[in-house]
Amino acid sequence: MRERSSNRKRAWLCSLALCLAVVLVSAIGVNLSAAAEYPTKTIQIVCPFPPGGSVDSTARLLGNKLSSILKQSVVVVNKAGGGSVIGIQAVAAAPADGYTILAGSPTLILAQFVTKNVAFTLKDFTPVSLAVISPNFIGVKKEAPWNTLEELITAAKKSPGKLTYGITGYGSMNHLAGELFKMTTHADITCIPMDGTGPMLTAILGGHIDLITNAVGEAHALLKAGSVRPLATMSKKRLPDFPDVPTMTEKGFPKLVASSWFGYFVPAKTPQPVAAKIEKAFAEALKDKKIIEILASQGWMTENLGIDETTKFLNEEQQKWLEVAKEVKLVQK
Image (cartoon, rainbow, N blue to C red):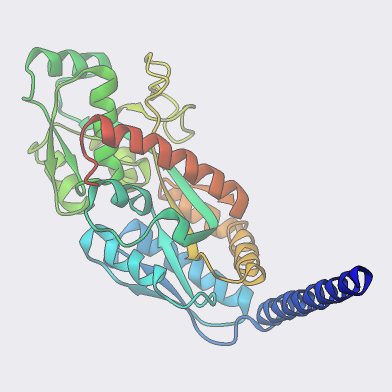
């Protein structure tokens, strides 16, 4: 009897294993089939910012190249609002089929810390490319009385709260970079929120704010023209475009490193073969010499990291900026 029962049990286990194998093979077959056919219709890159900004223009530049690589139309759709939250949430809720791609920036990470009731986390996305990066810098207008970073810090400590720095939005990268600057140097400066990059740059040129902590790529033209004078970059190495500008590390602040970046994301449940195909297309687009030159002329360095490297980078960034947000009590939940 025992032997008969044991045989039935073995037979049941074998049947179960066979069923699971069939399901697994079928799932793999579906995924491989989806990847082989993809794309069969227009792909949308969702930009969570208004038209005309760096995220938008970079997405359009790469979108044109992706169209030729993937042999399918790629269009950029702007879904601005809520400090980029509306566009990000739209992609998180979109079908995970590879036809909706997010043009992401640091707000994808930072919004979770400073905005209540955000309906997404980094785990809701698969990063298919970290495309470009640009270090932040401490800059003042050319007529400013401070010629070095040390002079600026001394002035800020001498008159606590008097000096001001502009930000493009509450919880933006330049906001967190500014707070990290304050924490690290103990310079007491006041944050002034602005309605985007344009108004902030206008404010620094007009003397309405004293300094900015933006990405080089967002103020590249003004930096090259000399209208805005960089006192230090928040990078580990000096930048080729500005070889005479020291880094924060050289100034004795090795932890004062901050960069803005643009990456591309699909919903987390996108089939791996489809995500891999999109990853490969972005990697090819970002090797195009013309694209590299255009981005470089705007102050953006081509990074071109794939899924695994981007995931590692984002996890490190998330941990770093969460600690800063908690330290300065920006975290809302």
